[in-house]
Image (cartoon, rainbow, N blue to C red; front, side, top):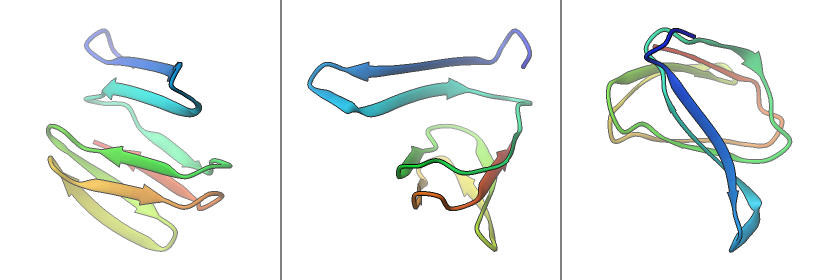
Length: 77
């Protein structure tokens, strides 16, 4: 991750079981992985290439991507 990339993970007191994550990535890649819970991602700028299960998609700004628990996925710029 270079100096222009940022990330923040937190929990809001009103929703203690909901993990929140905000990031700005330009070069960062996620290797293939899973999560025990749902992942809901909103792409607010730029574009991301995502593999969810067997599907590869290009997600431009405005895309909402939903990943089921334990579903393999990755991501790159």
